[in-house]
Length: 198
Image (cartoon, rainbow, N blue to C red; front, side, top):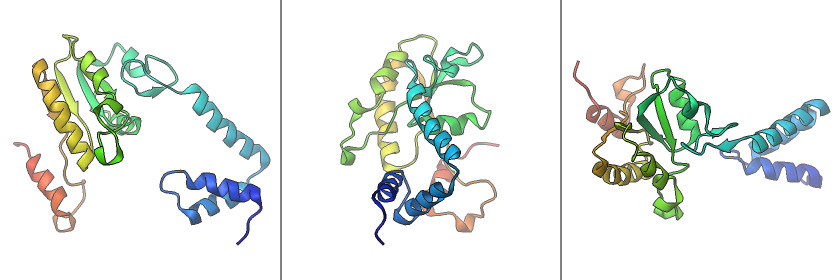
Protein backbone atom coordinates (compact mmCIF):
# COMPACT_ATOMS: atom_id res chain seq x y z
CA UNK A 1 0.00 0.00 0.00
CA UNK A 2 1.24 3.47 -0.81
CA UNK A 3 0.91 5.86 2.12
CA UNK A 4 0.99 9.65 1.99
CA UNK A 5 4.54 10.79 2.82
CA UNK A 6 3.55 12.11 6.27
CA UNK A 7 2.02 8.76 7.31
CA UNK A 8 4.94 6.79 5.86
CA UNK A 9 7.34 8.95 7.90
CA UNK A 10 5.28 8.43 11.07
CA UNK A 11 5.27 4.65 10.52
CA UNK A 12 9.02 4.76 9.91
CA UNK A 13 9.61 6.54 13.23
CA UNK A 14 7.40 4.13 15.17
CA UNK A 15 9.40 1.25 13.69
CA UNK A 16 12.54 2.69 15.27
CA UNK A 17 11.09 1.92 18.71
CA UNK A 18 12.16 -1.38 20.32
CA UNK A 19 9.90 -4.38 19.62
CA UNK A 20 7.79 -2.46 17.09
CA UNK A 21 7.58 -4.17 13.73
CA UNK A 22 6.00 -2.83 10.52
CA UNK A 23 2.43 -3.92 11.39
CA UNK A 24 2.56 -2.54 14.94
CA UNK A 25 4.03 0.71 13.61
CA UNK A 26 1.20 0.98 11.09
CA UNK A 27 -1.42 0.33 13.81
CA UNK A 28 0.11 2.98 16.07
CA UNK A 29 0.28 5.52 13.25
CA UNK A 30 -3.37 5.02 12.29
CA UNK A 31 -4.43 5.07 15.94
CA UNK A 32 -2.65 8.39 16.35
CA UNK A 33 -4.41 9.79 13.27
CA UNK A 34 -7.75 9.04 14.95
CA UNK A 35 -6.76 10.85 18.15
CA UNK A 36 -8.06 14.39 18.68
CA UNK A 37 -5.47 17.03 17.74
CA UNK A 38 -5.31 18.18 21.37
CA UNK A 39 -4.28 14.68 22.50
CA UNK A 40 -1.65 14.40 19.76
CA UNK A 41 -0.19 17.73 20.85
CA UNK A 42 -0.11 16.60 24.51
CA UNK A 43 1.57 13.34 23.46
CA UNK A 44 4.20 15.19 21.43
CA UNK A 45 4.78 17.68 24.26
CA UNK A 46 5.17 14.84 26.79
CA UNK A 47 7.96 13.33 24.62
CA UNK A 48 9.70 16.72 24.30
CA UNK A 49 9.38 17.40 28.05
CA UNK A 50 10.76 13.97 28.93
CA UNK A 51 13.73 14.48 26.60
CA UNK A 52 14.47 18.03 27.78
CA UNK A 53 13.91 17.50 31.51
CA UNK A 54 15.57 14.15 32.08
CA UNK A 55 19.27 13.84 32.86
CA UNK A 56 21.65 11.24 34.23
CA UNK A 57 22.42 11.56 37.94
CA UNK A 58 26.03 12.68 38.42
CA UNK A 59 26.54 10.03 41.11
CA UNK A 60 24.67 6.85 40.10
CA UNK A 61 23.66 7.62 36.47
CA UNK A 62 19.98 6.92 37.14
CA UNK A 63 17.68 8.95 34.88
CA UNK A 64 16.09 11.74 36.86
CA UNK A 65 14.82 15.30 36.66
CA UNK A 66 17.43 16.32 39.26
CA UNK A 67 21.11 15.62 39.77
CA UNK A 68 21.89 14.13 42.22
CA UNK A 69 18.75 12.02 41.84
CA UNK A 70 16.10 11.48 44.53
CA UNK A 71 17.71 8.20 45.64
CA UNK A 72 21.25 9.56 45.98
CA UNK A 73 19.90 12.66 47.78
CA UNK A 74 17.84 10.68 50.28
CA UNK A 75 19.12 10.51 53.87
CA UNK A 76 16.90 7.45 54.48
CA UNK A 77 18.79 5.15 52.10
CA UNK A 78 21.38 2.64 53.37
CA UNK A 79 24.72 4.19 52.33
CA UNK A 80 26.80 1.03 52.78
CA UNK A 81 25.22 -0.95 49.91
CA UNK A 82 25.32 -0.29 46.17
CA UNK A 83 23.16 -2.33 43.81
CA UNK A 84 24.61 -2.38 40.28
CA UNK A 85 22.08 -2.54 37.44
CA UNK A 86 22.41 -2.24 33.66
CA UNK A 87 19.65 0.32 32.99
CA UNK A 88 17.26 2.63 34.85
CA UNK A 89 14.36 0.28 34.02
CA UNK A 90 16.12 -2.41 36.15
CA UNK A 91 16.41 0.05 39.05
CA UNK A 92 12.68 0.79 38.75
CA UNK A 93 11.87 -2.94 38.82
CA UNK A 94 13.87 -3.40 42.04
CA UNK A 95 12.34 -0.27 43.63
CA UNK A 96 8.83 -1.64 42.96
CA UNK A 97 9.58 -4.56 45.32
CA UNK A 98 10.03 -2.16 48.29
CA UNK A 99 12.66 -4.61 49.59
CA UNK A 100 15.92 -2.85 48.77
CA UNK A 101 16.80 0.31 50.71
CA UNK A 102 20.37 0.98 49.58
CA UNK A 103 21.94 2.99 46.76
CA UNK A 104 22.31 2.13 43.07
CA UNK A 105 24.78 2.39 40.25
CA UNK A 106 23.41 2.30 36.69
CA UNK A 107 26.02 1.04 34.20
CA UNK A 108 24.01 2.35 31.23
CA UNK A 109 24.65 -0.88 29.35
CA UNK A 110 26.51 -4.19 29.53
CA UNK A 111 29.84 -5.32 28.15
CA UNK A 112 29.18 -6.89 24.74
CA UNK A 113 32.25 -7.35 22.50
CA UNK A 114 30.02 -8.64 19.67
CA UNK A 115 28.21 -5.28 19.65
CA UNK A 116 31.46 -3.36 20.08
CA UNK A 117 30.65 -2.37 23.69
CA UNK A 118 33.69 -2.61 25.94
CA UNK A 119 34.26 -1.88 29.63
CA UNK A 120 35.15 1.73 28.80
CA UNK A 121 31.72 2.23 27.18
CA UNK A 122 29.74 1.61 30.38
CA UNK A 123 29.97 3.34 33.78
CA UNK A 124 32.47 0.94 35.42
CA UNK A 125 35.20 3.52 36.10
CA UNK A 126 32.67 5.68 37.95
CA UNK A 127 31.56 2.70 40.05
CA UNK A 128 35.14 1.97 41.09
CA UNK A 129 35.56 5.63 42.09
CA UNK A 130 32.51 5.31 44.35
CA UNK A 131 34.02 2.23 46.03
CA UNK A 132 36.93 4.28 47.40
CA UNK A 133 34.38 5.61 49.92
CA UNK A 134 34.90 3.65 53.16
CA UNK A 135 31.14 3.62 53.81
CA UNK A 136 30.51 1.05 51.05
CA UNK A 137 30.50 -2.47 52.52
CA UNK A 138 28.62 -4.46 49.86
CA UNK A 139 28.06 -4.39 46.12
CA UNK A 140 25.06 -6.33 44.80
CA UNK A 141 25.27 -7.28 41.13
CA UNK A 142 21.72 -7.24 39.73
CA UNK A 143 22.57 -7.91 36.08
CA UNK A 144 20.60 -10.18 33.77
CA UNK A 145 21.69 -13.82 33.37
CA UNK A 146 22.38 -13.20 29.66
CA UNK A 147 25.83 -13.76 28.13
CA UNK A 148 26.48 -10.00 28.37
CA UNK A 149 25.22 -9.86 31.97
CA UNK A 150 27.38 -12.81 33.00
CA UNK A 151 30.47 -11.34 31.30
CA UNK A 152 29.91 -7.95 32.96
CA UNK A 153 29.34 -9.56 36.39
CA UNK A 154 32.52 -11.62 36.11
CA UNK A 155 34.53 -8.58 34.99
CA UNK A 156 33.13 -6.42 37.81
CA UNK A 157 33.74 -9.04 40.50
CA UNK A 158 37.44 -9.22 39.51
CA UNK A 159 37.75 -5.43 39.70
CA UNK A 160 35.85 -5.10 43.00
CA UNK A 161 37.66 -7.92 44.90
CA UNK A 162 40.77 -5.81 45.73
CA UNK A 163 38.54 -3.30 47.55
CA UNK A 164 37.76 -5.98 50.21
CA UNK A 165 34.05 -5.27 49.80
CA UNK A 166 31.44 -8.02 49.97
CA UNK A 167 30.18 -8.88 46.45
CA UNK A 168 26.82 -10.59 46.09
CA UNK A 169 24.58 -11.41 43.19
CA UNK A 170 20.81 -11.55 43.04
CA UNK A 171 19.42 -15.07 42.79
CA UNK A 172 17.82 -16.25 39.57
CA UNK A 173 15.20 -18.91 39.47
CA UNK A 174 11.58 -19.83 39.08
CA UNK A 175 8.79 -17.27 39.01
CA UNK A 176 6.22 -17.66 41.79
CA UNK A 177 3.34 -19.87 40.69
CA UNK A 178 5.29 -21.76 38.01
CA UNK A 179 5.29 -25.55 37.82
CA UNK A 180 8.74 -27.16 37.67
CA UNK A 181 7.85 -29.21 34.60
CA UNK A 182 7.39 -26.02 32.54
CA UNK A 183 10.71 -24.40 33.52
CA UNK A 184 13.61 -24.53 31.06
CA UNK A 185 16.92 -26.14 32.03
CA UNK A 186 18.83 -22.86 32.45
CA UNK A 187 16.20 -21.40 34.79
CA UNK A 188 16.13 -24.62 36.85
CA UNK A 189 19.93 -24.69 37.03
CA UNK A 190 19.98 -21.08 38.25
CA UNK A 191 17.28 -21.87 40.82
CA UNK A 192 19.32 -24.78 42.20
CA UNK A 193 22.51 -22.74 42.16
CA UNK A 194 20.79 -19.87 44.03
CA UNK A 195 19.18 -22.09 46.67
CA UNK A 196 19.28 -21.03 50.30
CA UNK A 197 18.99 -22.78 53.63
CA UNK A 198 15.59 -22.81 55.35
